[in-house]
Length: 181
Image (cartoon, rainbow, N blue to C red; front, top):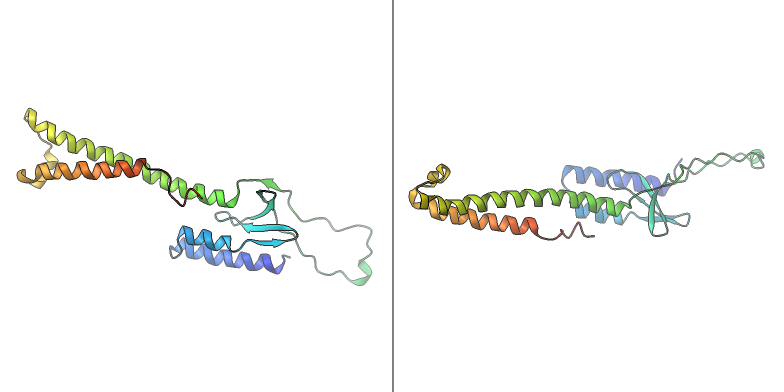
């Protein structure tokens, strides 16, 4: 049987996770709400992992995945002087990545994928736009640019170069604010 505080935090986590999964709560909002659920119990700080839903307890500066302590129901009066103590129900702790770093890594992974896609598309647009200027010099042209009409081919090439340059710059930029926390 869990202490009421652990049950309360599990229920709130389930509610927040459902909102996050439904898209009505942002990643930053979800993380912020989870931060507010950290509490102290038995001389340790406790939190619940964002993606795993598992319990973590503080161990110095680290978070360790740990089963929450079970609250035993009161024993009858005659059983209080037993020679054999009840076995402990806690699972031995395992050192893992702190929950905040797990969330940041997940967010960073998504942004890195997006950055790579922007970098690739930007490179393609820069190449097509630049080659659109060179090909007419040797009597050739991309058939794709004929869709814009002969008079709009150069503006289309310029737009591709500008858009490609922006995508390359964004794709090569530093980490996002959510990932650096």
